[in-house]
Image 1 (cartoon, rainbow, N blue to C red):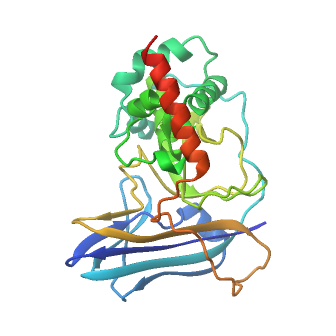
Image 2 (cartoon, rainbow, N blue to C red):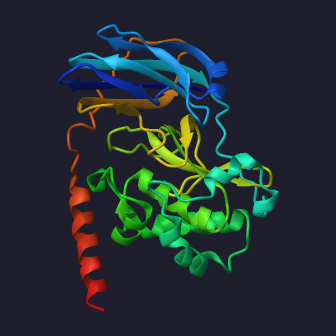
Length: 308
């Protein structure tokens, strides 16, 4: 299978502003590239590659005053298989974990294990350890939170998402990651591409997706609390403790986001076509009628719980 991925992102700065990006494909997928264009920066500025503390491929640059755009387009080979399942994968006690896993056991910016520990043990303490327990966490988070772009808020933490019962994919991932860490299961946050391959097309604007990985049975495994099913065509961009570690773009000074388009889909041609992507930009608020109904439903449910 061939999968096409890419993005168009534009920002505006009032003055020259240092900037980093977490938009490059992970190293393990570079050998799968069939063809690639970019990243292209307009206006032309110097790009410097570097690796962060978690081994992610990153870029740094000096964004000039005014407008700056970043574009990327690529086609990759993929095995076309859904995320693997290993129901027998077991938890390791903390003393048996590799040292590099320890960073993924403690609290982080968006994953407050200290606030959620008692709740986690009350919910999942009696669940069979290992794969079954992580899946139970995914089931709970998936049922607890309601998804919509209209609920997006960049500062929402895992504990806040649990109380508010709403969020976008990063909130689902943060809450699941926090619960896993509370149970002494190493969990890390993942950002990347995931299109509607093998599932009905979603009419919402395409975006980068967030999911998470847990360390069981001596290896990392993929889980997705938002979709809560094994999916085809995940392409990892970056991993970290949570979203604070791997912002798609980060500027050391103020900026305004003026364009944000993402695409990922199954490609039928082995090389670039002349297809032009007329994708809806997430910069434009996408408040659907469904989101309006969800908002009213969430508010009504919250009001009812508060009167009990």
